[in-house]
Image 1 (tube, rainbow, N blue to C red):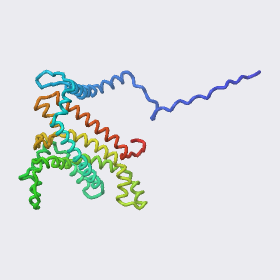
Image 2 (image 1 turned 135 degrees about the vertical axis):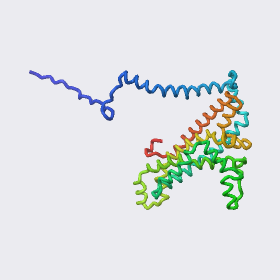
Image 3 (image 1 turned 30 degrees about the horizontal axis):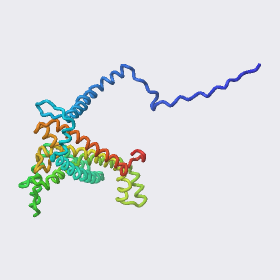
Length: 318
């Protein structure tokens, strides 16, 4: 009797499941509860963020005085903006402030973070002291600096007089108004310092030991270990700092009202005056969208440029 053998294909192995075991599908009831619980956040984002953005885009195409009816004018507000000297003045003032305040604040914050990252007595106390200025409310901080910058009895001029140096008009002079506000901004380096400090504590200690075994000193450790590991943190603080300085408002509103002679006419303050002083809500909406485009372009340029100097632990993740 002849026995017929049938060749069977080897059984295929099931693909490996997700880590932690097989993934359980959500039931309809669970999915509905998930949507229901997320619905307040979704509605809040749609109503209070997306909705106003769409409305402002529509208003930017109209001539709308508060209390009147919007009149559609197309891109008239944007055309008018090109011939508006105060628009260009506010943009130049804001750019000047950004180029001065952001690098100085990052430098001071990084330097202080390097210092308080060392082991010494009272380390926690000094970290707290350096961070405290960021906890002062914006208006209270502005009032404090108005007194410090007072040309008659302010703290800075009092110190300058006591050592025989010439005094300054600080906020009350066109040439020194923005540098004065840059000094004020640098005083609030605490946020950048804390982020830098967190990044420094994430640098592997064995890399410093390897540099030391190769005969490298403090500069070699900083150049070959600290700096490469800190470039993502520096980049983060750079981007957030640029976005923040393009939206400066409190200093002009509380301290200078855009003066002297529009020397501190920041972009957001100009937008505010057009909207709520001149009641030109359509023109103010156009200003807001131009600022959005400027910040977006600057951010994209920063991200493109970051590929040449920002390093990550995984070389391809840039």
